[in-house]
Image 1 (cartoon, rainbow, N blue to C red):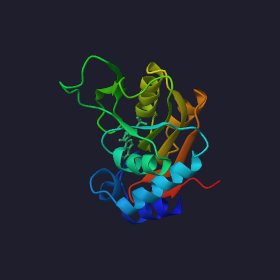
Image 2: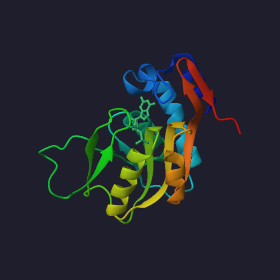
Image 3: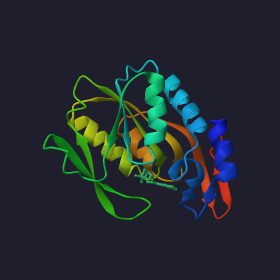
Image 4: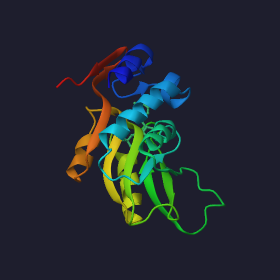
Length: 191
Ligand code: 5GP
């Protein structure tokens, strides 16, 4: 998606060979016009997949997912990183290793909102080693839902997430695919 690639080139900061900072339009400050276009693109791509819910991970997946859900005309579900006292017993949980923090955390889904009648589109901001997306897949499967595909804003194609998800039989649709990062260097995959 040219709009996203241009934004990454103008505002993204490659901090190392593995990490890209996009705080000014995705992770801290959010560009709603860009998020709306991202939502439109995901919705268009998956329009015939029978999606009933968009599933995302808090917090950076929420903004693009809201717009995607709006364009598809379906609800969005947030997988929670914090366990709250008001989430009752009807939940599924799974453990994720965080790429950016190097720690692990529990991801929680209330089973009140997803069941075997649902077909989900999973959306996340980044795809690195595929830990977060695989965790979202596990939770959706626990609920009995079908997975239509995985929509990613920024895929770091030099890491193993895409292969991991494709090997499990899932479609990975990424709006920007990064081939190489280095301090001050951002190169996209060109097919
Ligand atoms: P994975 O689970 O695929 O290894 O990593 C994906 C998750 O880690 C995403 O949800 C995202 O929050 C975070 N992440 C991975 N790589 C980057 C990166 O280069 N920059 C930022 N800002 N977040 C990243």
